[in-house]
Image (cartoon, rainbow over all chains, first blue to last red; front, top):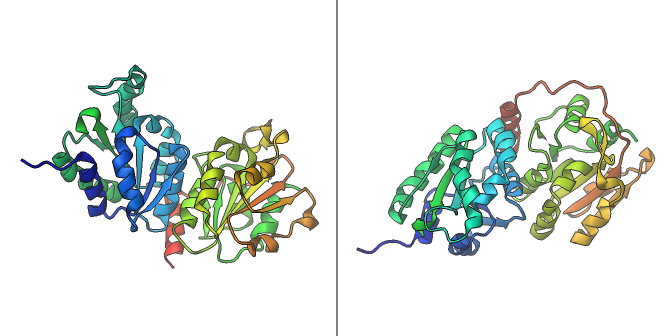
Length: 166
Length: 183
């Protein structure tokens, strides 16, 4: 059976959810999505120097009516904890977080393991809902649902894409 | 010049501009001087005022004025790089530089040895202003008429005005600000 490529599936759901403002920091697994977003004339794409900065930019964009998302590696979640709590939770702001979850099964780099293990716990501590699509088909179902949760509740929502997803 | 007098002098010149104000006493001082639906008081997320302002500037045609501080811009120097590269012509970034962390007891910051205006210049900012502590020299009208992104470095005295905590909920500040933008 023909199966959709993981990057294409994620990009399709961004379009379906009418995401039109994306900030990003690269991960090798996000490379294709970043290129699709960059090429899309209906999406403002802002490469940032640090993920926390990206959350600030997205907060401003949302207040002007944009539908924001961030593309980042899970290490960026660690860089952004205070912004998630004292900006996004405090002001009830939505954002879709597309997270390459390194340090999961199949990881070749031991340096990725500690933050990989901490990632779901950090999201739990921040009371941020998240989904773990295992396949492109699951991503097609879960990511639009995630954005609806984000928008309805004024909260960040995480999409954790583990190594096996790609 | 005291920071609150600098904020007063600048905000007296503002009309329809959207304002993002830094955490702590700067927001309290601005709110005390004048409250407005055009104000976004950033009550947490130290360091991110310039980033929030950039997101706004990229999503609206209205002019955006950011009151930032030396300690907070030092925490997010990468923001200068991103602002320069995105090049929003409607963004004015004001750094109120008292060379210390004023809201936490005036502990020294590195702004006493590093010239933040030169940093902005080195990043590539073309329209830069510097005002020392002399009140009469602060001519904000010129800044408002400049094409963004504009970097405004203002030296102010350490210390905070004796003004109360902002009696607004964060969510109400956001809702009011978003209604203002929708106008």
